[in-house]
Length: 124
Figure 1: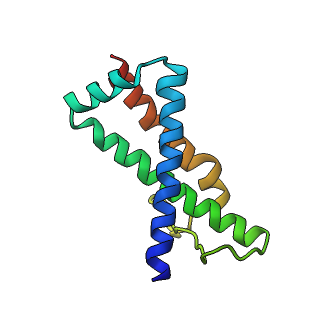
Figure 2: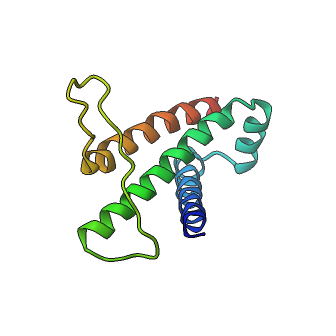
Figure 3: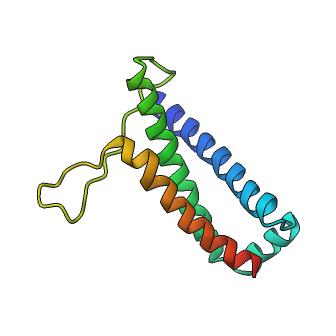
């Protein structure tokens, strides 16, 4: 039961982060009308794949950030969060990507690239 609640909590955190990010970039920075964005998304269903990628990255980011906070400050949050292990593909020793690098570089860069593609396609 705790696993399901943890999953729901992470999905809610990821959705909130995704919506804030999309609202800030599409409406705040690019000054697009929400109606225009929804109309573009409905006219081209493939754009929803980009939203799914952004949502997944935000969920992974939320999980790893909560794992980092709970281990760094030795605080037991509501759930026992653990890091999602990603490994280097081109490394012969198959090392795990450090948590700090994922939080400061990997997740933000991936979200920025996908969000830039989405913004270009929607603003067009």
